[in-house]
Image (cartoon, rainbow, N blue to C red; front, top):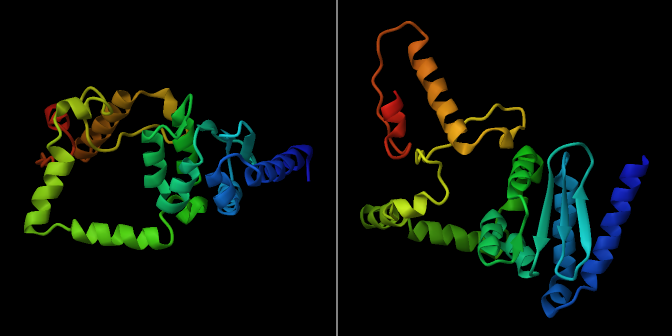
Length: 228
């Protein structure tokens, strides 16, 4: 065991002790579950690391086994870990929306999750009764004749002002394409969308076959169709 691995393990054990003695009834009540959750994340991060500042002011580092994305997270409220444990990635987003955690740069955090997606497995999914509650909720919102109308309204009839907050200027609604070498921040979202358009155009016209027709469904506000 090298010095870096030993230091990483020592920090994890010290963090566990602080978590069990954390301030607030929520931390004391769920300290065992929180600690197991963080240990699962630590074991699943094969590359990269997360430096998390907990609500009691202590700092805990998970991962660090191999080089990768290094993320910084400030957990403002213990409820953020409770939401992650019960609601998975959806609960983690809800915790961010509620101001229970933040990050000076969230891009490396989500890039880290993507790089370790296979080993993280079910860590980012709801567990226990919350998983069954989620399945029931999805069943109640299934795409029946009336359910489809509700779902379309909930997902698309939100106005351009909403989508302009988080899409690129072309309002492309589908995934962008980056270089595949982990340099997520090297291109803007708009650059990634235009890169995707160019790749699609190349695949359509590079074979030397007859012209092809394109039916654009769900790609955005017509920007891809305009490019092609």
